[in-house]
Structures are given as C-alpha cells and as structure tokens.
Image (tube, rainbow, N blue to C red):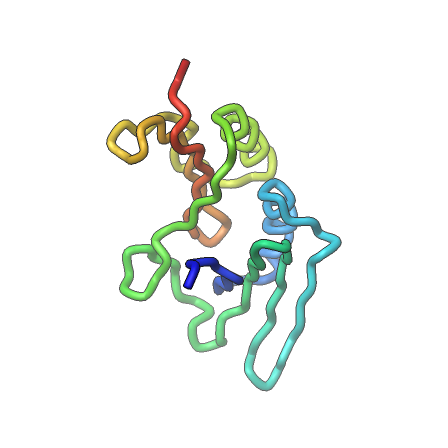
Amino acid sequence: MEPILDHIQITVRDMAVAEPFYDRLMPLLGFSLEHKGGTVIDAHEFHVVEYCHPRLAFAITSPRSAFADEQVHRRRPGSVHHMAFRVDSRDEVDRLYRELVAIGATIVTPPKEYPEYVPPGYYAVFFKDPDGIKYEIVCAGERAG
C-alpha cells in the first residue's frame, strides 16, 4: 500500500466564522473554490464544507451541539497536533506568510529555519485558524544561501 491521504475532515466550533476564513485560506494552499461543496444533515447535526483538489480533499465540519462550547486543544489525546502543507521554496513560504497575515490568520511563528528538525534546511511558518487549530507551511531540504 502507498500511504496517500484521500481527505481530511476537521471539526470547527462555528461554521459561520470558520467558512469565510477557509474560503480565503484554501486557495492559498492550492484548492479552487470552484471545487467547493457541502451538505447539511440535520438529523446528525452535521454541516460539512469540502474543498476538493485532485490530490486531497479538505473539509470543515460542525460540532455536535453537546460539544459546541469546547475549546480546541492540540495536546488532548485524539486531537490533531497540527497539519503541514509542503511548498517548493523558501520564497513560497515567505509569500504565503504575507498572505496569511493579510487574511487574518494568527501567526504562531513567522518563517524561519529549524535546525533541530530534519531534513536540514527545514524552513516553515506556523499559524492558527480562528479556532486555534495549528497549521504549518514548510519547505524542507532547501538550505539558506
């Protein structure tokens, strides 16, 4: 088996807040809003918005009402710590950092090299969505010149 992810689906607290943010974020990551879809299934308290790309689908989902007031904590068992999107160059990391600032993402760490990570030349920006879900944009293996 080849380890290929087909889709990722994360739960956000408030779709009315999250969807406009992801509508600005996902095109930066290579997703076209022309391939955005979604559905609501009231019987399951389920509202999903999916951003599709030929290589990966990414979806945001509403919480069940019993969990709507809970806070995201990436160190809680069963939680996603963070998700990283790979780009081809440090210039692209830097460009996307400026775009992230423009769309209102919470920047955790501006672009920098992480010598403690592998491979050598690991260069990344870390940011969070409105719920505090952590993401990374990384160029790995390109050394500073």
